[in-house]
Image 1 (cartoon, one colour):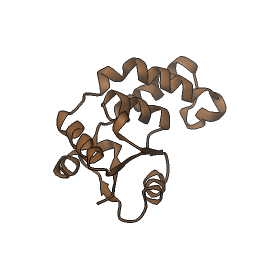
Image 2: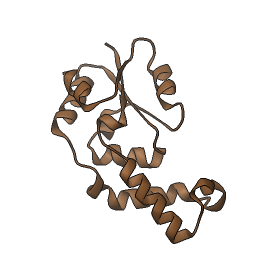
Image 3: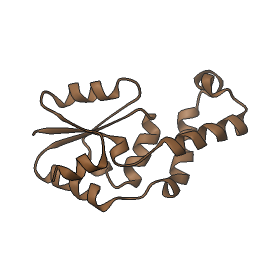
Length: 137
């Protein structure tokens, strides 16, 4: 195994923070979140700030997952993460989960998994759950 493509969900769940930010944006900025880019052009910066402020409430480091990432990296295995969440939220989550320094590549949004697999090359192993990640070591 030369590379691993890890689903962010194996490290932590960004969905609750994303939903809370959307609700906050809907209420505070009075926008239709379906038209976020048009109605709130700086939404990515606002999401990043919101996520950074609240991340400690939503994300907890998992020592077994951190150990697995550390071992993969120590063994020269390339580690990439893919997520459906926006890049800003994904990067904040990785930082608070203690994984940012262990991850070489990050792909987000629609088609993230396929783009990451292409970047990691042939033979990359896909890890979708915490149990799969911890089981690699």
